[in-house]
Image (cartoon, rainbow, N blue to C red; front, side, top):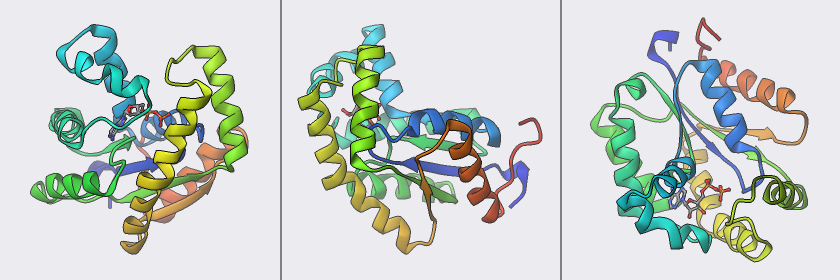
Length: 202
Ligand code: ADP
């Protein structure tokens, strides 16, 4: 794999694992767009679009947006020019059904994921970080009960997707405890081990 081919990455981790922050850093290092479904939905809600209206209540309750809707949003985004040579997905796929949807879409382009970064963070640590974030950012899906719902959904629906990707040999387990720079360096080292190249500009 050469730098010109880019990298097709997915970052997975429980709420509060820091995957959003790390996702942006890794995407920058590899010169690819970071595509976060959570960010796209929040932007849609903020803009008052039809999509925003459809997902507001679901997200406030900490439940998952229906697969068809989420998959449609991701397909549109991946079809944009900047994702032609690589991308980092954050928050999608989030269940086994979405793994199938993504396989189908990428397969149609003759592509597959090069690596899946699993950020490993102990439960108490992620809860602690989420509580701090709730106070700082005032995200209204960050109340204690809703956080518990989102973590339960993660364990039930999202964690199993890692088994699928593990069987394909593409998962890199990264210790998500440390400074932001330490964790970014760990991820980059693991991706470089796979022969994925950082972009020259980064
Ligand atoms: P977190 O990982 O902290 O729960 P995200 O920013 O990734 O937050 O997502 C926020 C919310 O957006 C989720 O709780 C869910 O309602 C919705 N969402 C994001 N990605 C997906 C997805 N792939 N499928 C269904 N719903 C999603």
